[in-house]
Image (cartoon, rainbow, N blue to C red):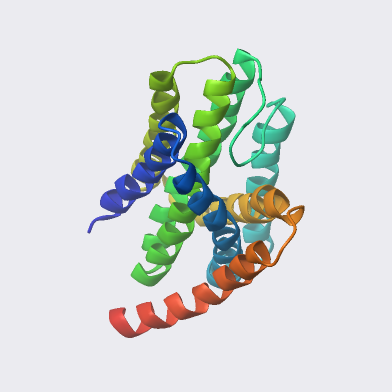
Length: 238
């Protein structure tokens, strides 16, 4: 499958998450909620063990762009966006909150595509690992944007449309990385900062306050899942 095919597959994750909201699929929402913790562990492991060693070959320059990616997501999601958190929105919010959440997530999802494309520029193995990391948080991402839009008074059709916008931003990130030189050069470092932010600053706080062992086990299971997936890919692709 081509890099663009992986981007399309990841983008469909946004739609699946959004459909769980607009069709009130409670069982699906519970499964996605469990995936949130697993995805956080997997993403963090991919970013720290898979991406950072490649990025830091450039020394301080690489680290600088990691920081820029991290700060850019915080700016988009928690400074310019007045109301944002991952997961299902269960309280009434203003219509503007839904629009601002969409704008904030669009930057993030664009760099999801940059991450996938940049990973494949390094190796097929890293590309697949980043695709899986992106896919795992695409489901709660779709839940987030659809539920915020509905809570803001928008129709279910517009909620699905907002999820489609996020998916298209991911596809655009792949396309532009392959044709825009600065993204091809610095995209992996920027996406590393984005991935670390989403895993550690967005997803982890969503399940930290919940009691019980399920979320903790899923989180550590996600990190262990990275090692298993890496080993399988190494065997399969060599």
